[in-house]
Image (cartoon, rainbow, N blue to C red; front, side, top):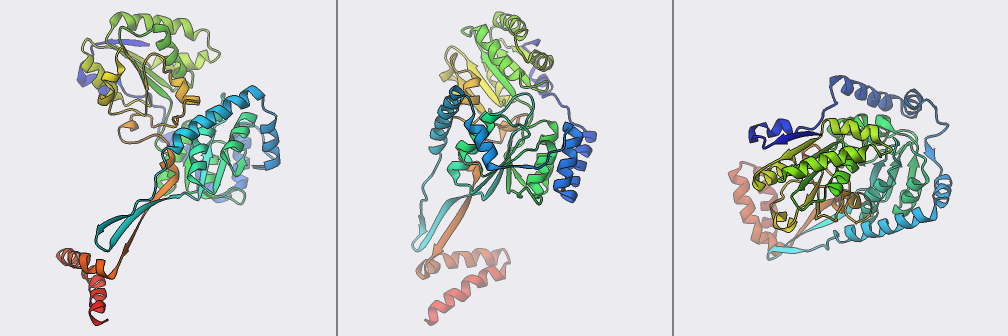
Length: 424
């Protein structure tokens, strides 16, 4: 990790920049994959799987009896852990439901809003080096609570924990495929894969870019997202062993992850950097973590206000407040995907089982985007009902405004109804 001392504010944008691996060449490759699937459907997916993964599947859909049997074979201890995580996540997201409230804005004018589940959603779970069954829970639980009738899961992984989590959250169909071609299949539909209305889930650069491209074409996605990241704001009270472990918990995700330490204690910065070097060599995913540390930063500020402003400027996916009095700054944290408060709140708990969702905005998008929630799986549809007496109240107002905007047909739609009331 590079150490920076009291950097001037004018250099913050460059200092806090995320590593970038995308380019025009990558976009052309992804667009080619999307076009191929759009044109040739299942055959394109089979051919691309053979090209990228070295094998050609006999079928894309995993029969329900197969993935349910695999789920049943899972180790009982892991089942119990998943069951408890599922319960915690469900409890937290259940609290996000809202009742329909009808508001009478004027006598006889009633308006309300109702949450309606998205009818078909797609969940993408990458294969890679880690079976992300936790993400099945994070995406599947709110989809289940929202009442989405069709939940389609795509993953190249055959890990039974993924299938067990899928069975818990009510996944309706499972497809064994990955990469940008899986995103294309969900976006456009094929003879085997149903087209969905919204796509959720993490992935590599190809998957992320594929989601961004289909989003431009009108397919909804969960959010702009990229490699994992964490910022830790630590003061003199922080335990360097804890802080180093937190930084490495994100660095081990992949070479393109980024971790940032912000501190007002210069000695702590040195101790954390040494502890990171000590712990990283013990990790099975050491090579990935070390690659991520190359573009990671440790920043010391003499002024706590600068530290606060810096973490807000970074707008981290995960922000850990390893502070003596974290409650004193909570109301001043404006930009972060998820905040972990105090010395005994590791980010890992949010990743798995505390209850909050771990699908969060990265790359600074936390300035404007929220993480996945129950709302991500519903549409908020407004309704209104106006009685004849209500139209006599609000109608003249609408006529005046429509006439001022030179929208005669709008005014007339009100006037013909008001006139009819005069003749009844």
